[in-house]
Image (cartoon, rainbow, N blue to C red):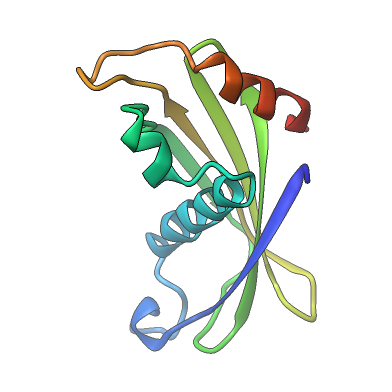
Length: 135
């Protein structure tokens, strides 16, 4: 599983006065994608946190290509684009179901930190699981 997909339906409260998905919601969609990506690998964030392994977002970006509207079904595609000593980068594409219209694309960089909130290397077992998935 190099690319993982989830579907979400745009809710009314996710739109702005013009009826278009408010831009900030795409970062939530990205988070949903990477959370489910890791859960699907058997690495839910909750389990990592029990081991005092945390992954805060350190950088993110999004390029908007086409508007999404209330009740659209969006497919969020997520994959690992970079794995470093103490960080991981996920890439994302959001498309409208049925049309394959590209709505948005972006990335999320996460640092690995320990219980003291200090940067720490990604555990080897985790790195070994993620390394083959880089696209």
